[in-house]
Structures are given as structure tokens and as C-alpha cells.
Image (cartoon, rainbow, N blue to C red):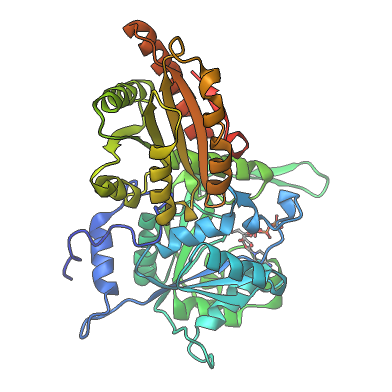
Length: 451
Ligand SMILES: Nc1ccn([C@@H]2O[C@H](COP(=O)(O)OP(=O)(O)OP(=O)(O)O)[C@@H](O)[C@H]2O)c(=O)n1
Ligand SMILES: O=C(CO)[C@H](O)[C@H](O)COP(=O)(O)O
């Protein structure tokens, strides 16, 4: 089999992958993509995915089903869809939702511009929801734009951090073995209680694994298994791999998954997911300045201090000139944090230019973009009170851009003549910027902070 074209293993649109490319198996990716290509005369491996999303999230203990709970104001399921649809070799994604939530789901698809999604009605149990998705993919469905895939991935809608490499591994293994699923080492030991509530026996932890998602199957295997299984299986079963074993004698290949594959189940899992997402989108900060010498000088000083204060963050700088071509590239490359440098001025001309560029791009559709409008003022020459009226305009700007998911904050940094004092205020400013970027607190937008 020929390898895929160079660079073809990069993420497809839209948006960055939350899970990134950590540890991606590029060789396998190239070979699967080659198999998945649909050039005439070439064998193509058709892969689809079914996402059960019809649960009510009882264990979460909130009225909204957990798949629709917001993380940074975007429903959890949208993150999972994004992780799957960026994998270009998955042709169709079938999502099972309850009739009650069908319209909500349609509006999520529209708002976040998800593609290749089909909706089916969920069942009263997870297995029934999955079966409903499989039926939609089976060939015998009338009026369906879907076609039967060779391999189908099954993935819970509430596991947003699924990486391309694990999808690839389960699909490749399913093609060979008929079924495959991701596993993780057990965190706790599994024990069996007896009827009187006492310990009957405990399992040897090292010999057992937790079954996670994604799983993948030859479509004919899993569809046959679901068609044959009993009402009891559909009502109480929790393991698709077991159905393939029981009804098709297909022994699933088990694939080691990453810790991020865990299922959002309890309220605390939403907080954990939010922290992971915030960390991923805070990896890069771009310092933007105009081409005036003074601005460039101060901008670069701030860039250096940010670099030394934030070891793990990539800090770059860019000018707002040349029709912003370089800056546009940075936006296209999905940098979600900008610091706009203004020296001895309280107007927002430069910041507004940057905001217009961001508004024109689609960058903030999926994640909130942070913009810190930094104003360097010599507080001895110009007391901040003199500039405050002008600076207060940030409130209106921030309100307006918040509608586009851009979080605008103001920061006054003291700009003394004394070099040592300047370094200290730059350091203070960098700490505030780091915290704004990390926290993405929408309650603080339009505020003027002072370093
Ligand atoms: N009738 C159901 C029940 C569950 N699911 C989906 O199966 C996945 C995993 O199930 P689980 O974590 O158990 O979700 P819930 O059933 O919603 O949660 P809980 O058990 O706490 O009620 C979720 O994406 C969930 O929406 C489904 O499609 N149809
Ligand atoms: O991990 C899984 C598969 O092996 C499933 O996500 C899990 O078993 C689903 O069960 P439930 O909906 O009861 O949590």
C-alpha cells in the first residue's frame, strides 16, 4: 500500500483538535488515509461513526443532559463532534438524540458549523441508541443519504478528548480482528460483594482493564450482533465488544488508550474538561504592536518578560502593518490570545484594528478569544485619572465583541523612565495577562486592570 501524500495526516477543518497530535502514529495514519482515499480505481475503506447522545445524565445531577452542558459556553457534545469531524477519513457521523432534544442538536450543528452529521432518534438505553444509529447506516434504509461503511466507530458523545491516533488504531485493528476497543488500567480494585453486603472476592487488578471508548467494528459484525441480541442485552448491557463476542464470536483486539478518554459522568468531570480545554487554548500568546519605534521597543520588552514568566507558553509578536498579512496567518493558525500594545495613548485605534480582523475571521466560533488592550502610560507625566474617560470606552467595545465570543480586557502598565521600575511593572503586567489568558473569565471583560 502506498503512503498518503506528505502532510496529508494534518487535521481537517474545522478548528484545532483539542486532543492534538500527541503520539500520533503517522505511518499508520498515512496507510489508512491511503486506503480511505476515494480516487477512481483505488480500494477505499469506508469508515463512519455512531455517537450515542440520548442519555439524561442522571449521575451528573443537573437538569440539562450532560452532553448539552456548556463548557466555555459551548455544549460538551460540540467538542466531541469537533474531535471526530476533523478526522477527514471518517465519512459520516451519526448522532442519536432524543426527539425532545432534536431541535437543540440541530441548532448546535448550525451554530458551530459541524459537518457530515446525521441525526437519528435515540432509544431508551445506550444500546438501543447505538442500534438506532447502526440501522441508519445499514444499506436497507430507504431515503437515506448514508451508505453502509466497512468499519464503524462507536464513541460516546460525552468523551470529548478523543485523539486521531486512537481512532486510527481501533479502526485498523477492527479491520483485522472484526472488533477493537480502547482500554485503560484500572484506577481502583474491582471487588464482588456477597448478598449480605460483605466482601465475596476481589479481582486481581493487574489482570483486568477498564473498557473505554472509542470502539470500532466491521459493520457487518456489530450490526449482526445487535440484530441477534436479546431485549435483556439491549436493556441492561453496557459493552458493545461483548455483543460482538457473544453473537458473532468476534474477539476484540484491545488497544491502550490515553487517560483523556475518560467519560464525563459527574459534575466534577465538567470542571476537569473545562480546565483541559483552557490549558490547550492558552498555549500561545501573540503580542501585537504597530510599527512605530517606541511601540516596537516596549512591545518586544513585554514579549521577553512574558516569555520568561510563562515557560510553557509560546509567545510571539507581530506588527499590525502590511495589511496584517502575518497576523492573519497567526489567526489562521489558531492562536487564541492576543495582547495589543499601545504606548502613551488611551485610544483604541490599534486594538480596534485587531478586533476587526478577529471578527472577520471565524476564529472565535469554537473557542473564546482573549484580547488584552495594554496601555503603557507614564503615571508621573500623565495621571491615569486624566485618561480614564477615554479608557472607559473599553466597556462598550468589550460588550460588542463579547457577542462574537471575544473577551476584551484593559490593562494599564506603568511606564516609568527608570529601567528597573519598568521591568517590575512589565513583570506585574505579564502576571495579569497570564491570569486573564488562563482563566478566560467573562465576568472581567471591559475592566481596566492596573500593573
Ligand atoms: N438512552 C441512552 C442512554 C445513554 N446514551 C448515551 O450513551 C453515552 C454514555 O452513557 P452514560 O454516560 O451512561 O450517559 P447517561 O445515561 O446520560 O448518564 P447516566 O447513566 O448518569 O444517566 C452518553 O453519550 C449518553 O448520552 C444514549 O445515547 N441513550
Ligand atoms: O465504557 C463503556 C463501554 O465499554 C461505556 O461507555 C459504558 O459501559 C456505558 O455504560 P453506561 O452508559 O452504563 O455508563
